[in-house]
Length: 225
Image 1 (cartoon, one colour):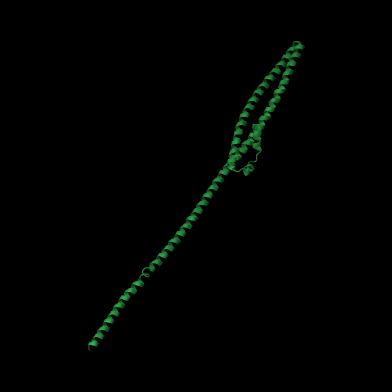
Image 2: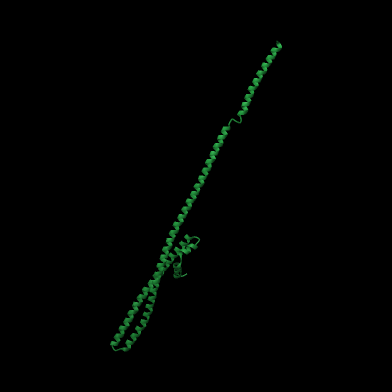
């Protein structure tokens, strides 16, 4: 693709539309900016060559105009010397040079128009480049904002989860404490009734033994009496 056709495409391009259609707008705008900057370098290099050509054409125009003027002076001199033949020949040379003057003037005019077009297109491209860089800056800011918001959201979710786990652990500890209190209240109750019964049985056996001995003693006294 030529410099000017590519530059025209860039100048006529709708950056917003291109970004809307791009999968990665940030990457797309970097490529657009790089393309514009590369094109500007090429156009300015081409402009320098065109300006150099214009200077050469301007110098050539001055030269041929001087030559035409010189041949006219020669024709005047020939006429003053009554050498019409030489005057005619001098005017013929002047006429040939005037044709070259017309060619150089046309070339110079075309070059000036080319330079004016270049200046206009470069100005438009420079404006597009400025717009693209502004878009790039806005995209970067939006990207950073979105990243920050995502980070905050993730942090909020993490804190919410941490809070939920902390509350769960708190209730779990409360349940453990309550269960421990219940267990403490039951300590000794499973064993104490059996132990008390055994001790009470021992007392009961002692009473019965005492009662038995008393009865034996009474009976023994009765038999003896």
